[in-house]
Image 1 (tube, rainbow, N blue to C red):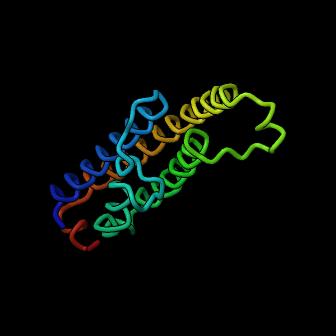
Image 2: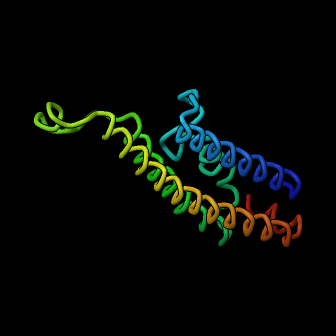
Image 3: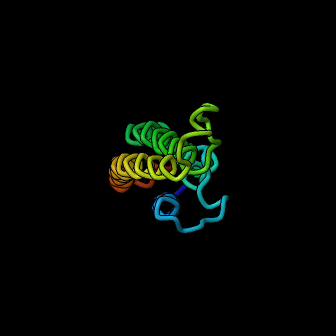
Amino acid sequence: MDKKTAITELRRAKSAHIQWRSYAQALIAGIPVEKDHVPVIHTSCNFGKWYYGTGQGLSSLASYKGIEAPHEILHKIYINIFQLLFGDDNRSTMEKLFGSKTKLKEENQAKAEELMKKLVSVSATLLESIELLEAEIMSMSEDELASLV
């Protein structure tokens, strides 16, 4: 893989992550999003497909290893958000009889919004890690990069 290809693929994956995050934010705002636009599993999103696919050619680089943890955490946070907004109603029978579904929905929305703040923060960490990887690739010669793959 040459440097131009590596950088192009990395930037494409980075853009896919940013788009994924915008879809997640849209859900919180109540904007309908196609189910396949915001995959729950970290290996199913376009960034994950790159990271666990062609991106593996860069796996020996130190900065590459720093990407996996924040990426997985993002999806774990998103799972929690998704469950709050769209999960089953796990209230007890008494709560269902005497509780307010509207109040529960409002509480879940507030919790989801708080989680979204964490998701955005972790996303910033992921983007910084991606930038470190890009800088590491840019600092390499074509021969060094070619020897990775």
